[in-house]
Length: 396
Length: 101
Image 1 (cartoon, rainbow over the protein chains, first blue to last red):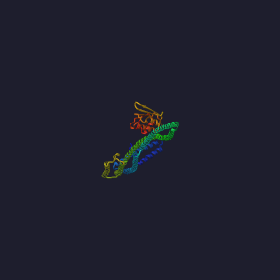
Image 2: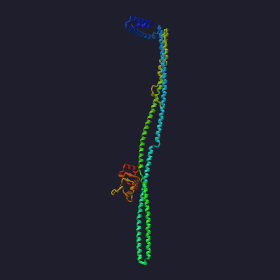
Image 3: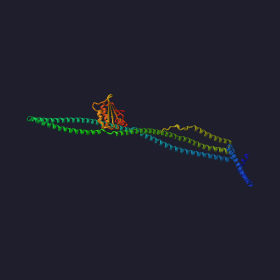
C-alpha cells in the first residue's frame, strides 16, 4: 500500500502534479473541511515517501553495483565524510585546549601549594624559636622565685637586726641597773658624810668643854667637818654625772628600740604580691605551652595536608596521558574515516569489475584490521598510571 | 596586762600569753618573764591568740627566747596565731625554727 505513494513521490514531478491537483480540487470544490484534509493527506504522503527513501539510501552502498543512483550516494557519502572529519577535528582541537587549560591550572595550583608549604614551614620554625627562647632564657617564674628569695633574705636581716638591737637594749637595761646601784651606794656615802659631820660637831663641843687642853682636838674636829663637807660635794657631783649618764642611756635605748621595731607589713604584702605573680605566671606559662603544642600540631597537620594535595596534583600527568592518547585516537579515526569512506564511495558508485570491487573491500577490511591491531597494542603498551596513590611525594 | 605569764611547775612549761600588741613596748616584761638569768623552763608556749599587731622586735624577742632556751634544743610552740601573723612568721622562716600550731 505505502509503496505506491513512495514511488510516486520519489519523482519530484509527481509531487508537483499531486500538489497542483490538490490545489485545483480546493479551488473548484471548497467546503471548509476539504483544505485541512488535503494538507493532512499531502503531509502523510510526504512523510511516508521520505521514510521509504531513507532505507533505500542506506542500502545503497551495500547494493554495490547500482551505478544508476551513483550521484546522490556519492554526495551523501561526501557529506558524511566531511561532517565526521570536521567533528573529529573540532574534538581534537577542544582536547588540545583542555590540555592547555589543565596545564595552566595545575601549574598555578602547584605554585600556590608550594608557597603555602614554605610559609607553613617558616611559621613552624618561628614557633620553634619562640618555644626555644621560652625554654632557654630566664623565665618570669625564675625572676619571681629569686625576688621571693631576696625578700625572705631581707626579712631575715630585719629580724636579725631587731634581735641584736634587743640584745643591746637588754644590756643597756643591765647597765642602768648597775647605775641605780651606784646611785644607791652614793646615798650611803652621803649618809656617812653627814654622820661624820655630826661626829665632828660633837667632837668640837667636847673639845670646847675641855678648855685649853682640848684646843688641838678642836682643830682636828674642824678638819674632819671640812672633809665631810668636801665628801658631800664630791658625792653630789658624782650623782649628777651618773644621772646624766642614765639619761643618755635612756635616750640610746629609745633610739635602739626604734631600730628594733620595724614594720613587716610592707615586706609581707610584697611577698604576697610575688606569690600571686608566680602563680599567675605559672598558669600563663602552662596555657602558653599548651597553645604552642596545639599550634605545632596544627602546623604539622597542615604540612601533611599540603603534601597530600601536591601529590594529588599528579592527576595532571595521568590526565595528560589520557587526553594525549584520546587525541591520537581521534586523529587516527579521522584518517580511517577519510580513507574508508573514500573506498566505500568507490565501492558504491564506480562501475568496476568484481575483482577490483573485492580488492577495494579487502582494502577497507585491512585498514580497519590495522586500526584494531593498533588499538590492541596500545591497550597492551606501557600501562597508564591509574591511581593517585601510586607515587608518594615527600615534602622537605 | 599586755603579757600574762603562767608557769606549770609539774611540766616545767612556761606559757606566755601576749596581749593585743606584741612589739617593743613589752620588751622589758618579756625579758623579765623568760629571758632573765636562771629562769629556764623545759618547754615554752607562746600564745598569740589576742595579738593583732606585731613588728620585727617581736620576732627578735622570739629569737632571743629560742637562744635562751637552748637554740636547736629549744622546745617552743607558737599557738593560736591568726592567718596574717602565721604568714608573717613564715616569711621570716620561723616555721623552720619553731613549732607553729
